[in-house]
Amino acid sequence: MPDTTGEAAGSIRSRVAAVIEKIRPYIQGDGGDIELVDVDANNAVHVRLQGACSGCPSAAMTLKMGVERAIKQQVPEITEVVRVG
Image 1: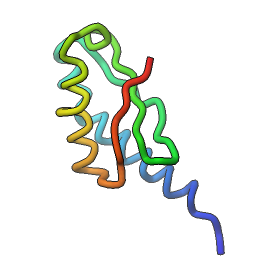
Image 2 (image 1 turned 60 degrees about the vertical axis):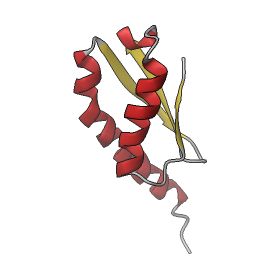
Image 3 (image 1 turned 135 degrees about the vertical axis):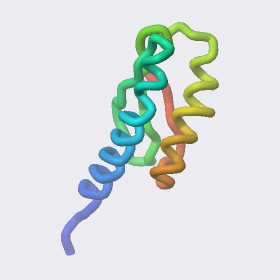
Image 4 (image 1 turned 90 degrees about the horizontal axis):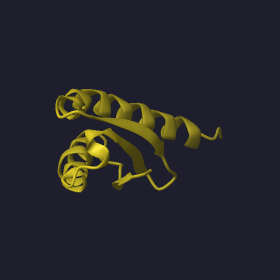
């Protein structure tokens, strides 16, 4: 039986990337940006917030209530979204 773990992870990563591309214009509209860094073995998404978002006091709320919610709606396998760097 072939190992499809890598294929499944790639599929999840590409689906997450597609969601990020959809929400990116809203984040850029506020002077920020978001970068997909990784989707780990536990299906946690690691993102880097940039620009105005990197120092914004509302970034944590945006991450959980906006980004995480949008990603989980489209990719229910995701367990959480974590900010890095």
